[in-house]
Length: 406
Image 1 (cartoon, one colour):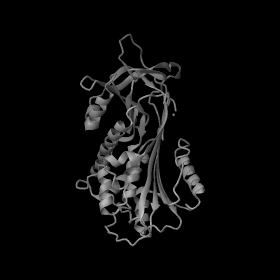
Image 2: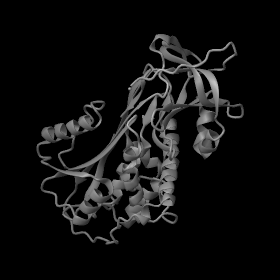
Image 3: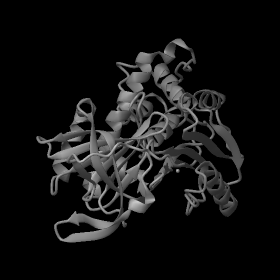
Image 4: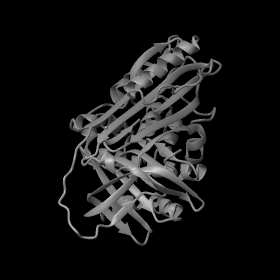
């Protein structure tokens, strides 16, 4: 879940650099352009992971790079050329390779992703702009944000802060099926616009875990800390690889409907080394080495929520200009000068025997038993979790689980 609040400053006369309005066309939604968007999203995902891993070394992490990228790209529609280019750079979108028109068409195509999924997988993406009723948005901005992002425009009286906050929180709660109830705790009296992006995912394991096999097991948080956590167990065939050079195991656990949860399980004490290796871009190549193999898989049940102040987290990785007073958002409105006053993100995950809800249905798999020795893959120490759509390897959520009980 991602939101921006935009605060009005003293009204001044502004010179607006007018650039051509991006046009929506089928040609610009080519497979090549879409692939470039996905590659940029993947690159941004790990750049942000690197920053978060350093800033929150002993904490759980969970966030949606797709939600964050989409929200910032929406903001870029209201930015003039310099500020817009800084946003693109922060999002790892190289405009020398992909044109601005293709960027916006690419995000429009991402919004259509849920239509490509079958009924076994639920993915809902929604965008909304809550706008002060007295603020005059430029027509071009309104047209573009509707055309590319299907954003609702909702008029709000921000002079009634409590009512405005409750309206926005109710919208978020509805779009996330109740997972996020109170996103906004406060609003500034100067707020004139709140931009919301929500992403709700619900997937059922292709082969459900048997609840009767779930039991309390040791989870090695660090050398000195062991927690008892509920561990789910299932023997089955999964794509897996044991990387001796990285000292980690990677296993892919599929959901029904062309999505997967990828567990990157470092050997004890090797989390930071593994994080560095995957931040340097080796994940996609490593995933090609996964082979189906019968294993005893142990993964913890999860229920956690993570909030991030993105002004703090993103400033070191290229977004400082957007969060400064020199940012130019005059393509939103030329009535007042605008600045981004808040940028917050919240993500929630519930993972159990049936599947995963992030913001389950049950199937039972029957396999032939044998007396062969089956390798054990056990996520009983800090690990990295990725939830992705398989057909384009689109990262929906990324997390690092240091302690399932926190």
